Length: 400
Image (tube, rainbow, N blue to C red; front, side):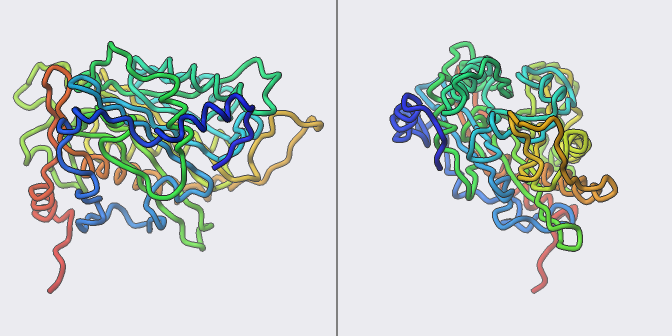
């Protein structure tokens, strides 16, 4: 992947590339048990969410042009955090902005850049996800990154978009371990193809629905008769609720769920969920707002009530080249062709399904993590999960 960048920025990115995948201290490896590669995704265990087909990778990167990069930070006994970067395309986003919208499900969060996105309807930087107290560092890094791109020498205002969830149960969040270089590493490592899920990047210290959460992704591809468009989703799951899978009361059956026996542990509410929705359908900001609202249906489907302390946000954008917005133009007008509103409903369904499956993938792929002050978040027990889903018909038994 290449960017049109200044010589100084090129040197910085090249210096970071050798370390761009993960920064994991050797003595910290036992704190994360198991391997994400050994754990299944939903489709691997026969769990099919919804009716629409997935893209080839069942990931946000099925949407043409979308790139994802992680920087995972696991150090000593206390650092369990990281950064995840999502790029709508591999060019200069400031010069070639993409239509975007942000929807707030519950506003207990620190999503930087939301007001300008919703005022102007465009995204002009990558989307970066991290932890609550590092979101400001992430935003600053995005500004520096954008100013350093070749062609942006005269830019005096940048609207960085950085979101977060609170990983303070497993991570010494007050330490604010994430640095500007960590953010740049995540951006530099961004690529297409399969997306790492579970305890990676911004999901390293996340907990979800009573179990270890993290990064999850999924996609849906419209049949050609509906336009052939793709919707891809990436989630950072760190919220409470009652885990429900295809109607199966998994959380209740496993004995871990919000309000059980009226437990007054308020820490269980301190979470959040960041949802990023990408599509190649030609949509404007108003239409993307409508799509983003449907993402919250997927969050509800897996059992989230969007509790008081949960910041739940949806960032939606279109990668379609025909609707990109040039930073400067000699013309006072622009003409674009957009999908008609009556054609949006299949995209609504796709978004709802993909969010639900992405959340489940984040749980299935996450491994047990022990971190700050010895706190442990256990991985979802796969065998029992499958058994419950089969019991309630969420997973259909195969004919023999």
